[in-house]
Image (tube, rainbow, N blue to C red):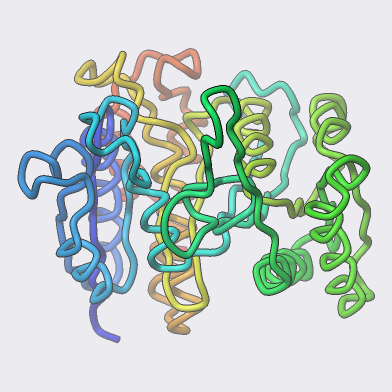
Length: 359
């Protein structure tokens, strides 16, 4: 392919700031390679409400279907008008609508940061379509029911299909890393639901005899990560457990602001930083764009593998190495103890792109 169409949905809060910084760096990296990116800006969140009457319109989803990949900023769905409270939030709707079953969230300790675990280098494979997240585990509607004024039932859904495909993705990743997978569950109490998750993951593990496999209950796993996070390689777990653990590992690695992720199916992918919209610092130009930038690195790596395009790999490497060199120069935002602004950090990374050697 001579060009790729990448959609950008800036979203709410600090979204516009970090998306602009991210796009500036991408364009600098793309300019250094023979690669053409066609940007498609689409409304999401408050912009979608103002322009199209909804946080995520059908028109936007139809346009995303025509794109090779997309970059999603954070959303502040808690602040949306009341009529949208019963709907999936934008990221949940995109994951559900496009069946983006794998939420891949690395956590790697970063130099020049206040990382609690200095040798952490792991990746969490979070099942993204069912489990205990009721906004995406039903074919239609939400999986919560108020059966009386005093009783609410929230459902968790676990299927062989969903567990198998996230387990396979995790084990394939482990084969390219340190060949170790940790399954996280709560089968001692939630015996049928997460017990089934553990059972199917163990079945998949039999196909990968080279991979060392262990499993932990979710509560024990949280403690192990705090005490010895550097011992883990690939973690696979259900939706809610993965969401919680990835926020924990992001902070242990230095800051939630540096935590990247992508959401993927077999054919589509979406970059989305793990952090939220941080409305308290919106417009102050101090938001950390590293999580968004590293999410984009992951997105380009995914595209490179899908299309067997070395140019995309070069863009990803150039972007990743330029960010690392900028951090090494102690140019970081306030959450990492520095004084750089969102925009000045992006400018410094672009300078490293220009000065760095070709990768």
